[in-house]
Length: 305
Image 1 (cartoon, rainbow, N blue to C red):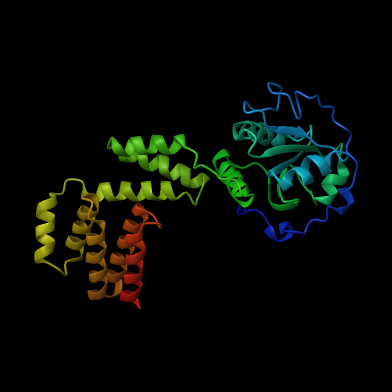
Image 2 (cartoon, rainbow, N blue to C red; image 1 turned 90 degrees about the vertical axis):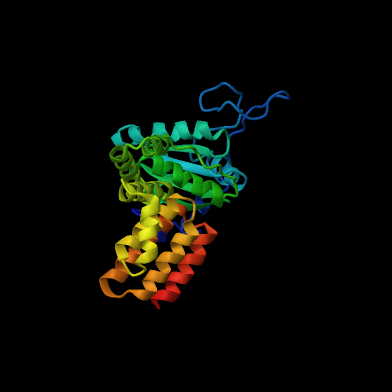
């Protein structure tokens, strides 16, 4: 779940001792029979009426963070007025919290006004962001991260808290896909590489980049002629690779996988490695959850070992 830059060992469940902050009485919050909780339409309240952003103090920490996190994931943003990076990260967190419409709550802690909370969480630099689920911190990161990566992290926090997370649409992917579909391969490649620079594990961008490579490999090829050539030259590596590419583009991915697994069995050395890498690139296009890919991976492993 964590950003790779995080030292996760100090953030495991129970590693942060919050006992000193438990039991601190929170001031009573007035309610009326017609309204319990924050009124809609106020700053920090999303359209759905759930709390999105709250300022937390030592007096309200138990109620607003620990107790609330038993039912709703709480993300705690440690900040200070003098912190310039905080002024970059906090507005993004606040906007994403509002978008969440009550699925999670952003609790903002001014470290200057609440040094005891910062001490309990071992905050050594800000901005520092913690995820609290079930009354305990489960993950954290420090510094400013790209919004796309932040969205992924929040999604993982929500899943850890048992919240169903819909896969958000990514306009960056839409633009890259549009470029790919229109045949603008250079623009598509640049767009996919930019996404991967910000989110290295983005499977959709990896698949898109693999499709760009595939499109370049088959450019100008005569599909029927390529398949005929491959049929008459089963040990011609280049002919077999091109035939497999055309089969994938023609919706015959399983046939392409079988073709290349067979070629792996018949080759050795550099040729074998070239075929293996090519086959893996075709797997990337389909994605790891494709049953045909899982079956072909097992066949490839058998062929290699």
